[in-house]
Image (cartoon, rainbow, N blue to C red; front, side, top):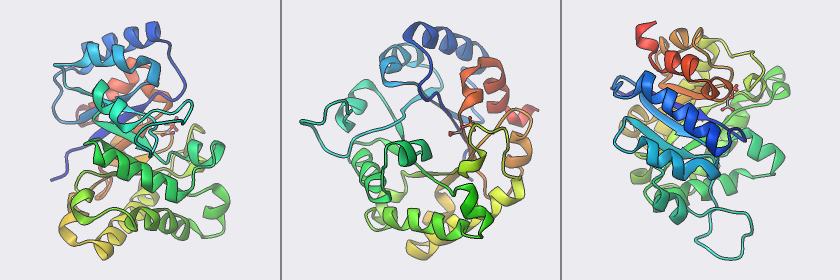
Length: 252
Ligand code: PGA
């Protein structure tokens, strides 16, 4: 049985002051809720204060990015050791905004995933197609190419600590979610590729999230599908009440 995971990606939002307010509200609503594993990924500047507020609670800390080198002259970058030291258990890698705006290749994404695992941080590896890919029937091809870069680097024993997120780019921040059936179909395909490359036990154990305009209205139907194990949430994670409802989808 795979435990549902909901991760909030705050992106480039929230000052430290605003982060404190949001986390306090979130704790009021969801601290101690055990049916869903909840991860918040604030911006780097808020990680410390977030850690202080959520230690000894059920909310888990994640980051939005990581560098694949250990340390050194990489101005503006954050290392795995820094994230480990600040208490991050998860890190998002390969978000489409990073692939697109910051030209991160699938190989770089895979190296970031590997580096996070080296430091005991679980990567949430994002994959997904653009609208033009979907319209031209290339969804599977694109997703496969992104996954193969990861498969080329990660060993079977490392896969146990990996989370994937299928995020069709056309569904991110657009209010236009994929249908639960379409999302499930691709997530099943991802699981089949994992099984082909590794084995069935790993494929059945690994959590694969859906991301792209998830909200408190569509979460239940997404989670009712066989292979969707949770959600990577952008916009809605910036507001405590709707995010908390989404987290508690079992009660909706
Ligand atoms: P959204 O973002 O929920 O605002 O669509 C999802 C994401 O970028 O992970």
